[in-house]
Length: 284
Image 1: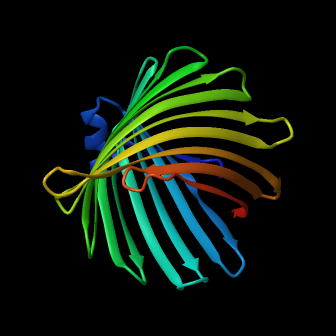
Image 2: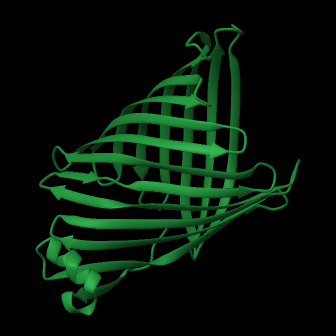
Image 3: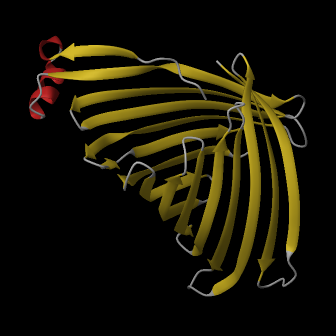
């Protein structure tokens, strides 16, 4: 999604008591507020679904190396095939960002709420700790730790996860990325899901404007019922190829092909699936 150039506002200490206190607390004479113009996007398949989204972002620079970022999003989705469904969702993420040398730490708090005409209200909240370190001009590592909860009329789920990834850029147009993700989810205080996933991807941005991404992953999941006994486990391999390009006046054309194989311990026989699709998206 392309963003418009941000407008910058300088709020001096004497303009507002709250701003003065905040600036004084960090030993700064002024704070810079960067506001990004809201971005709108629309995508859909005629007669099947459509999705509209609006995003906004602001960054308050308190002092060199310390800032506070806030992002908000509004999403509306409509499905017309099968059982008609519509939903409206709002999400918020806000928190500090600290940069020390080659390291950058983000500590966002997240919250959101969705209204679905079939399932009613769903709310979620949580926090994260994201650490990025530049090992050199071409290598970056990132460690993400998240804790969140999600509640609706039928269930309550708590999930914690950790994701460690490494990215290496061969050139400005070619890069690889690999990582390991582990998560633990508890539903209604009893049922548990333990998941481990390793993944790798090859990313290319061609001079013609096309972007290609080839990603493969191996995921193993273990499901435990109340009391800690193992109900079943499964293993899934996935290979996905995606491509996208802005064709004209902020219209983006994208497509994907994927193939997967899943095996459950209680079923034995593997299940193979293949899928693909084309998407046309307008960015405002």
